[in-house]
Amino acid sequence: MNLDSVIAVGQQAMLITLLVSAPMLLSGLLVGLVIGILQSVTQIQEITLTFVPKIVVVLLSFLIFLPWMTDVLITYFQDVFRGMSQVVR
Image (tube, rainbow, N blue to C red; front, side, top):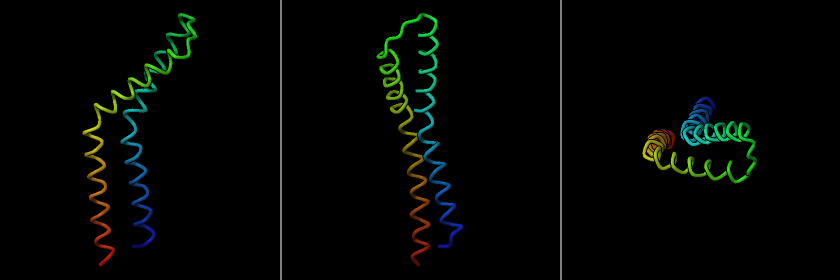
């Protein structure tokens, strides 16, 4: 296993990490933005109003995208383990 293949596996791991975490991060970002706009318009500065909806939405997006995320991760790890078997030989 040379340096180029190690770098390629590392790059692919970072890309998979970003891809798998994106639905939860984007949903939390969107809800935070909507609540921030709502708070600035109505001048309600309740701190729990920002956290509770974000937690609920991130949890729901996790449950909704869980089958897709596991499929992406299983495919990635299968490719990594196939590559390991070629290196061992």
